[in-house]
Length: 349
Ligand code: GLY
Image (cartoon, rainbow, N blue to C red; front, side, top):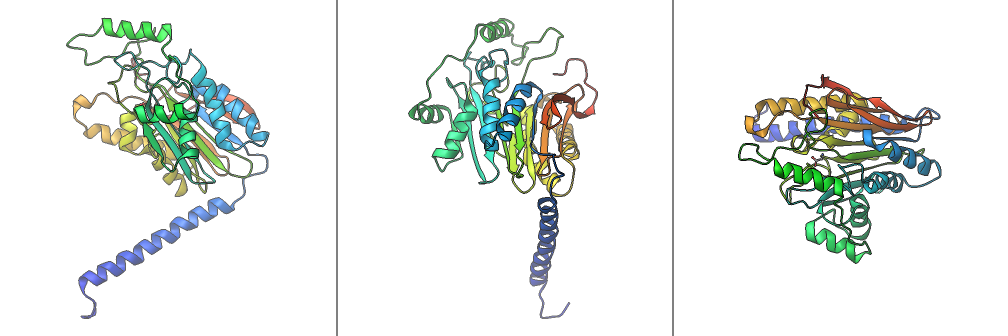
C-alpha cells in the first residue's frame, strides 16, 4: 500500500468499490428480470393464501377487464373480509382477549411505489380498503387504533359490530378455560389443533407487468388488546417491488416480523431465486432464529409465504406441510400445495 494511502482511506475506497460492484450486479439482475418479457399468455397471475379462492377469481377477472391490480386484489380480499365464516379476517374474525375485534391490513401499489396500512382497527370490516384510503388520501403510511378509526369515519366508513355469535361463543369458551397455568392458551378445533391465526394475503401481476398486493387479518385469536402482528407491517406481512415481484405472509406474525419476511422473499427473487425458492429460504431463517430463542417464546408455529414475480412465475411455501394456496392464471382458478420444510406435526395449525 502506498504510504500516501492511509488504512482508513484504503478501507473507505475499497468499501465504496465493493458497494459499487454489488450495486452493479444487483442492478444487472433487476434489469435482466425487467427486460425479459413474460412468456406470451402467462399474465395476469393472482396468488393468495388458501382462503382466497374467491378473491383470486375476482381479482383475475377484474384485471382481465382492465382494472388496476391493487383495486382488483382489494376487491377480492373484501369478499373474504365480508364473510362471517372466515374467522381470521374482517367481519366475524376472532376477537382480542377483551372480546373486541381488532383488524390489521396493508397494501402496496407497485407502479406508483406507494403503501398504506392500518393496525388495531375496530368497527370497520374492510381494513384493506382503509389501508388503501390512507395510501390514497394522506402522505402517511400507517395509522393505528383510534386515529385510524377517526380517519375511516371521516371518509364515510360506518361503524359496525364485527363480533358474530359464533366468534363470541368461541371467545367465551376460551375465557371459560382460562386458568393460571394456560398462558392465554387458544381454543382448539375439532381435530385438536389450536386456532391461533389466519390471514389473507393476495398478490397480482397484470398483463403489463404491474404488481400489487394486500394483506388483511383479525390477527392472533384472543390476543392482548393492542397487539399488532405482521400483516400491517410493510416488509413483513407484505412487500411489492414493481421491478421484481410481490410476497406476503400468513401465520405466526411475531416469527415473520423478526425476519422481515415479505421483503426478504422479494430480495431473494431480485437475486435470481424462483418465487418458491425465495419463500423456502426465508422460512429457513425463521427456523434458525427460533432455535436460538428462549423457550418461552413458544413452539415453532406455521408461517407461509406467497410470491409472484414480474414474469408471472409464482410459488408458495410453509414451515409445515398440508398448507395450500390459491392461484388464478389463464389455466384457471385452483388450490395447490405449498412447498414445506417439515411434515405437519400433530397439533400444529
Ligand atoms: N399473520 C397474522 C398475525 O400474526 O397477526
